[in-house]
Length: 334
Image 1 (cartoon, rainbow, N blue to C red):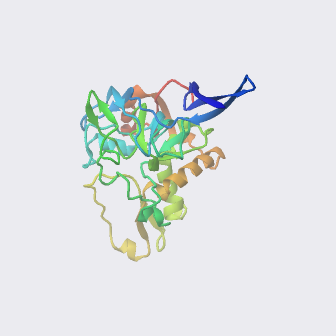
Image 2 (cartoon, helix red, strand yellow; image 1 turned 90 degrees about the horizontal axis):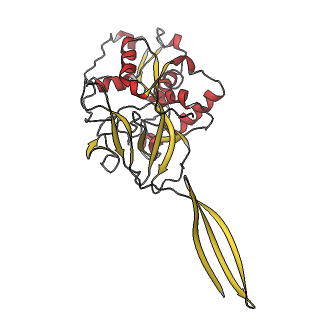
Image 3 (spheres, rainbow, N blue to C red; image 1 turned 180 degrees about the vertical axis):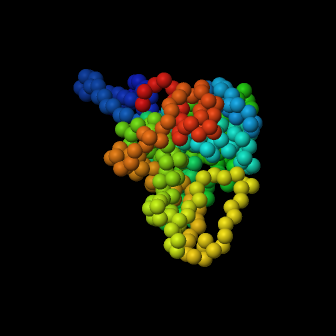
């Protein structure tokens, strides 16, 4: 006769060790069997309180607040942001030059971090993974994702700017008040929640302080040259066959004027978002290319500053004194 007992022996971050105890009576002697299995804990129902730089309204300084970050729902991932850098698109948002934004909002879209917990149905990430949020997602299902010539996933929030997750709710609150998301990322916070299609895992040996730039700025410029223009930079405006690529998030009222003769002579004018990279495919490879020293990100990082100096970091950008300022979210090492 068998008797079975299941005990939760101990818990570790991200996993549980479960012991199954079985006893069998043989000729009056009780024999004890014990087997152990390890199960990953995928869900975390705890609301995290953390620091975030909240933009309450345009043209105002950031306010460092203690916000609440809800646990990830189905197909979502909660990340501890380690580093985030300042991009000109964030400055456009702060200055009110992006008309479709909803305030209050947590900006930032160029970051790196570590998975803290995952929601139901997430199978490609686990606690502890080193990751980069993606402001251009890759669902793998829409017409753009299925087209090899496009990387502009139709499930992006860049155009609509609704500032909410897929279920039209936010994971950020401040004393009960809803705080909006930004470009499927929101990295100006110690913790953020993103959809799994807006996240990629990278090699854990990559320096998170440096590779956060792959989340936007570096990838956009580098990819515009080698993916979109497919020409060396010196040839990009060549008479008769040069290609000019427009990059960057411009205010919606911006206009471009040029003489038609520039096109009649054979030049090509085209746009590029995120350097033409299909994000979930391209970013992990870019991180590997950085590790193999195919390119150097170090010269692009002008300053590394504590998160609390975010307003000063924006002033360095506006004055032209900084190429990229990276904000360190915590005092912890990588």
